[in-house]
Image (cartoon, rainbow, N blue to C red; front, side, top):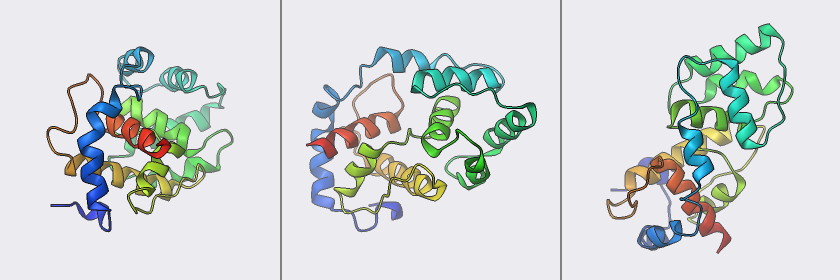
Length: 181
């Protein structure tokens, strides 16, 4: 049964994607040692240092936020619960914060939220799904999270081979590669 989030999906193309996904992942970056090491760098209670480590991995500029802004960021990241992202909207008014940056933080802090990128959104659109990429709109990331979750739910057991990576990362890599082809 197709999850509600995937309503309107091109089911034939989806079946083709799942059949090809194990092969796609061989060349899509599923063996990225830097990414895999990053998954285990963030441990313990949430702190500003964690965000700096994640930002460095993601290639974001490091920012020295004032104490009150830093606390606002940490509290927002602490209270947000998967799959909801609406509570993060207020952070977008802060300089240097956009949705891809927040998605990186959430991804490595929770190991549940997917990274947000233009190629994966394009891959989702190839299945006739509405998935805008807007780095300044938290609602577009909310749609993206729901679609990736739908893909995880709908995936047959054989579609996602055993990797030491989160399933949403495998789907993200696969969908981005699908968009490029």
